[in-house]
Length: 224
Image (cartoon, rainbow, N blue to C red; front, side, top):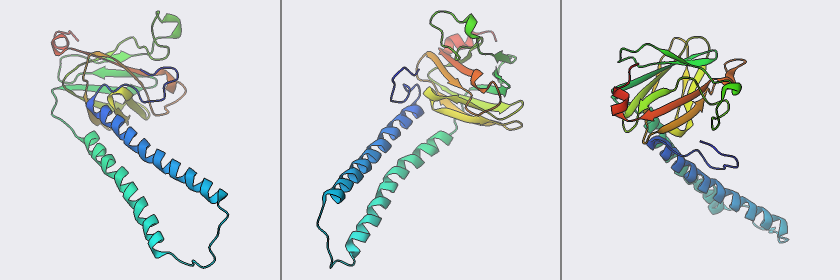
């Protein structure tokens, strides 16, 4: 979950989100170094009163300020490309969760089971209990087992939606007539919150996503 005054990302609940966390730190180190360099250089230029009237060119300096930025971009691009490949990697998981976006709620089903689909609506503010999160609680949570891969399939029944679960590092478009999928590995039991991340109409802000991870034994004993 996020908290008041939080400056960092949400706590990682999956290996891919931890990789994103590390890449964020990696990128921030680079940006901070560039910021400090530019500020120091700016102060030196403002405070320096000496000028050179004889230096017309500096091939070595031009080479340096071309090569160094290229190396910095490469330092940023290589881990980014690795992370992109990890995000697109698909596993042969036995658990499949299909999420279908509607205006303005989600419906879920587990295709390999005998279950039907169920709808997940946001709980109105007037019906919230003590300790519930405003605009994030739903009447039916999506259940997945922790400690194993789950393939999430997203689609839409009307307009564009996006199924996003920040703590899991998962975000994908839900497009009418198309199935998009991503692998999700939940490391530990808990309740994870997300929201539709594609503007889909007047009540776009009122279609939260809640995923609860339970043990595989409890998951297999459920009667859907």
